Image (cartoon, rainbow, N blue to C red; front, side, top):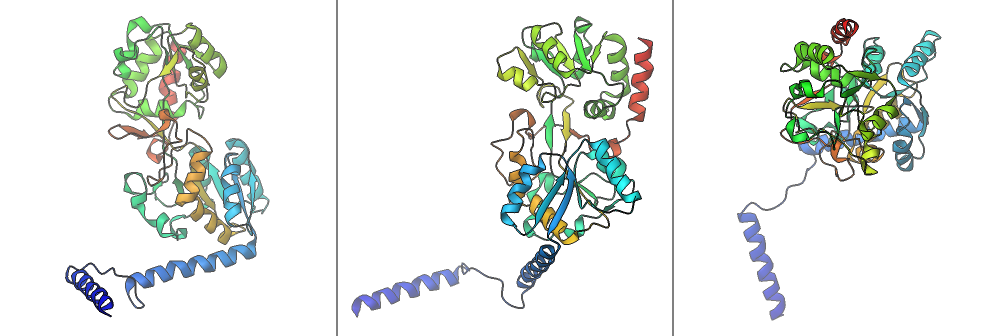
Length: 383
């Protein structure tokens, strides 16, 4: 009995100290706003999930990387079949438009590049807003995302959401011919000693592969049209559309530098891993900054979707922590704009870094390639 009394006395003292210092944890109670909010989203989620199961599937038109991503989704929601239709973006856009002209509304979600998403689907008024569909608190909470916000690539900030934000290096060099510390600015590429020693991806067609670095140069005030004109007129550039040849030429030293060559598209990352003398300028190498790209990490909800509730579940899952971890795993170049997930698997060249000036090439204010190509074509034809 004496021991029991001592225990009770200690418990009383602990309880007194906790209550005195305000350390009693508070939980949402019935009638509290916090409880109402929690009950609200959970009830909405359950209603949506029940309706989604009746629909039975979601149809995605997008990049083939989403096969691996949504295999994880199907493990969690086995009652929701995922049908993924993949193709190159131009063919995908044509297919969607053709189906709609025929009165067929087969696609629910678009998951691919910003070019088709913005220029075809958004401008064609084929998308519904995504913002009202976000339910999960961890998705709605913008503090979980880079720069404390959701990143939309349409002017209204509602329709086409980017969830990838990878740093993309587009200028590489032969390590036997170039001392990278000697180049501290893009203007250093105009040094006469590099004349005739730069090979580039042919930019004349404005392909998706060359668009981001051209946008970066054109829309960066310290570079702009003056840099473009001098680069294309003074440097005796060699252009090629053969990515393998460009990588080989750089590795054997036929050229000292490459331009507009995203390293994974030209296999320069593979060449470096094999021990060949190639490397690239990282995000902090050149003072004007570098490119940020959403690549294939953009999502849009097509209007008149056949499976709206299943689409809503898929969107929330993909943007959740679990979904973004699955997305990031599909490619070492993916760097999710969620900042509360591990980044260990992101390739060093693709990781966003603090203190770097990034130009987000997917933003609508940078969408127009016409003035850039006009400058290039004027100079390129006169060479």
